[in-house]
Length: 257
Ligand code: KIV
Image (tube, rainbow, N blue to C red; front, side):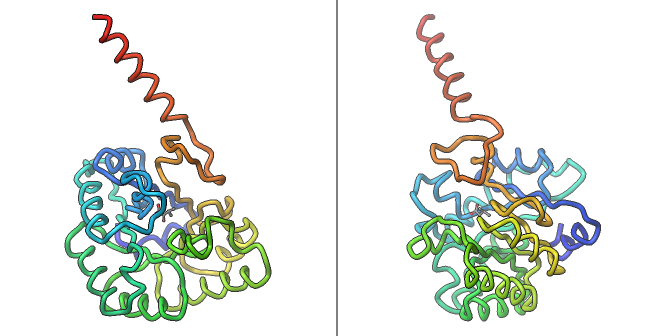
């Protein structure tokens, strides 16, 4: 699917479901499960690479993992998910030329058809506008933006008047400059509902209530694979416990033979 086709979901009131993937196994699972969008998020820093935050991830890491995810696709489930790759920390904050270079590499060297960028500060707006003019579709990301961890921590955003107005205004700007969708992370339900109603482009929420045009989750959180769970994602299963128990049982039975 191409990024511009996503708006059809909103116009037809069909929920958009997005899952993250970080290798060929999770890519194959997310595709077969029926995700409309597969995001190679920079959360792979924690779920695949063992870092504490998303900050250390590089463009090389993102390209490597995006290609691995896409090699896992079987392409025989009747639809092709839209593949989006995160622009990692400092790949777009250092100016437009550098951002074109890095986003261009992601688009040229992987099957991703769009990149995701956090924030909408004036410098970031310039970068996003330039990338869109150069033919690179952009998914925005507002609210809790984990690349601002050192300033923001991981706390819920949009709780006070100023922060709420900032998120509303920035979402309008992102639509105006041409983003095809926006992720809203960890903000009040009423705020994401208002933004989803006001904007024409799809709003995809995580920890932002049920009234968005779609939902996105980190697959490792949904499957309960992490030691640390975000407060806004109830795991579907306790994957880590299930897999560890089964493997321990197998190890113990093998040792008896
Ligand atoms: O990196 C990521 O997985 C993300 C999601 C939380 C939306 O940006």
